Amino acid sequence: MPDVLAETLSKHYSEPVYGLGVLPNEDEGGRASLNAARSLQSFVTKVDNFIAFDNDAWRSRGQTIEQGYAEMNRELATRIVTLLAAGEVDESDVGENAMDSSDIMRTLDVGGVSSIGYASTDLDVPKEGLLSKFNDSEEPQAESTDAAKIKGLVRRAVNSRLTVPCEVSSADRALIVFAGPPEVISRKGVESAREWLENEADTVDVLAGDDPRPNSSTLAAVVLLSNVTETPRIDEIQNQAVDAQNKIQELDAVRDEEIESLITDDNNDLDPIV
Image 1: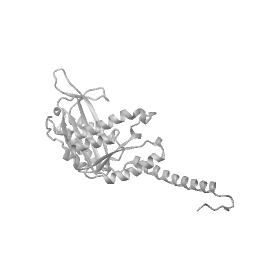
Image 2: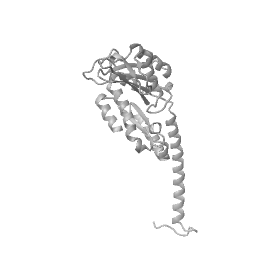
Image 3: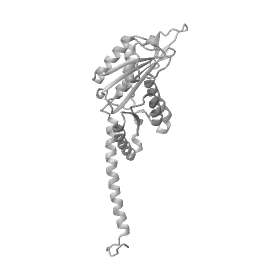
Image 4: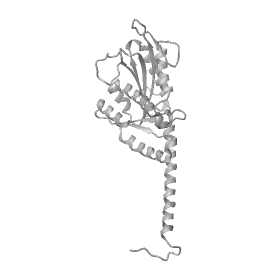
């Protein structure tokens, strides 16, 4: 998946270099955590921004990584594609507050580790073809497309599973993209959602815009939190990595002693051949 993301990003942005890292789950052991922690240090300092995805946060109860691989890839791809589609130049309508690649690059420009949230809702399409209201799959009742519902979609994107769990208030910058039919995106709702995220992220550097999709039967909101500095899972991996490194060093020392004991006679009377 990192290779796929790199290829996708290169089609949109020729100069900045972005990376994607998948954090190992707890069951993979200390060596995997050590490799991940060391790789994270290398990648974050060498790319313009590093988008993290935590396997543990996305694995269902009792599900192995192999069992959830396709589902997790699909969830990650949905977020990445929805985010990057706002920077595409195509024949679709231009929104009142259109988002483009420069907005995405500006948000990612602060560097560090980023996390992405996502939420979507199906739209109720009457037979006459006019989109009139939401039909949220999580709530059986249809919802009207007013400002409160637009704001609610963003709240759900942030409060549901992020690609890597983090404290929203630790984000340096943030960005919201709404993808769907332009007639259902409330201008008041977009502004209300942006103000809510400003308060949550404790920053005024929040951009919000839309990516019009006239024929879509879904309205989606993707939230990019850039340079998040409070990520408990990364802290946990680093602690596991330190423990694993210490254990490896201890085992190496014991092995060296055992080898020395094996090849040396009890009284140390023998000398090696020079």
